[in-house]
Length: 247
Image (cartoon, rainbow, N blue to C red; front, side, top):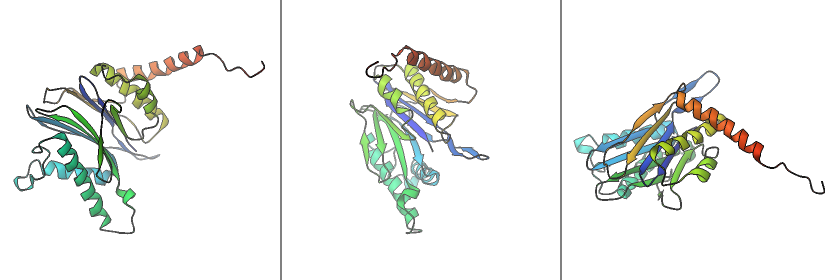
């Protein structure tokens, strides 16, 4: 399982993903689920992936090859004229990989190879954009009514995002909010776990912003996790108790 979130802020874009790919009693594995491409002064692209690991790695590998090999530059996300066209390229590549896997065994369900992706970035001359790409290759774009996207194990971390997200918040507040969202998910679902990767992108900078990895022993993450738990207990205690009718 996976958990990834992309936020669309007034200041730019923020991305965070976990790294756990397997969580058995004696086998815990990790892999990077966040991938970036950059041509400073022209474009920045970030892609996060959830779903079948072989599918997502094949998609990222094809996209990466088509940015480098001279004979494979079409379609290339470094040559596409808009983020919308990049979303189409990623969607078609995802569909290409899934269809290719199905061709090897028709009895297997398409869901066995399924994957979803969050794509965001900016190309010079246009606004920063954020997309959610489905296994079928189609996609939707973030806007004022849906300013963030989640993929993977979304239900545990969504309530805090819905209640506390504000597009006017800065990157520091946004990362704090994401850590609370991820902490809630990690505590509720073993297949989601640290380390966490994050990337920020400042509007119109056309270069990658702050990047980092939050390890299990990160002091700030521990402070956020413990502080959020205590704050919830305090808030719960301050709510009025339920009264049975007639009492």
